[in-house]
Image (tube, rainbow, N blue to C red):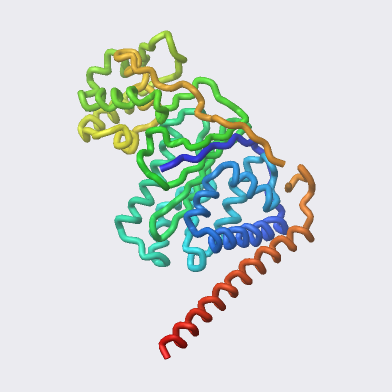
Length: 359
């Protein structure tokens, strides 16, 4: 699995006007059809999971060049434009409450696709764990509020989700190709103009030993952690002086969760993270204790690697030209239709040739 990147975007008010959004749906649908026809479903998933391509795509269909609404509106347009019966791709989830409907929408897709119960559960697991990793293992202070899962009948998928931090948003992209681990260096490219300090990245290679020790601490029985984590009113964690000090107050509820994790005996760090109730505070506490006791220092570097800017709706870098927009939609649709017609004619010609040879 490749997590192909993140993007930091400022929060803007307002929404796309109806006349623009209707065109966004048409143009995004035409672009999607063209890509799928020329290169196939997997290539579409690869492109949509690329933060640079997605940003350029959102600018092409006419939204703000750097607004957080780029994600929610572009994904909303794609969800309306992509017809599973025609493209073989389903778009589940969305913004806010819509994101929580993702598991049910995956199940509903079984009426369109021939999804087995196993495949449904695998897709639901991928959706849930990708969100949990970005909220729990990547502690960069961004709270997720948007989640879209793009998937095919074969189980290939891409995920686009976004988190909010004060006046900024950060977008995360995932791709199912070459799936190996959800917690070990899943980033393929992370784009951000804003770096956060004291970011705990438990997916980094530098955090490998800390991940291992975190699991060992749980499997050995978390009761011995009480020397570092105290329950009740006076709760604190003794921390080493050589890395950033973060709030790690787990409380009684947190200790109860650690005890339940001990009873379940997770085999590896992914299983530990996947446990219900294993949130950011518990993950951070285990990481810090691992560091303190065994010297396995985790990565405190924000995983963002690249910076970029593109140039919508608000007139930048230039106002949307409706005539040109409509022409683009028409041109793309005609191109796809002509390509499909040409393909159909070729197949008919081959069939006629076959019949001729048979005679």
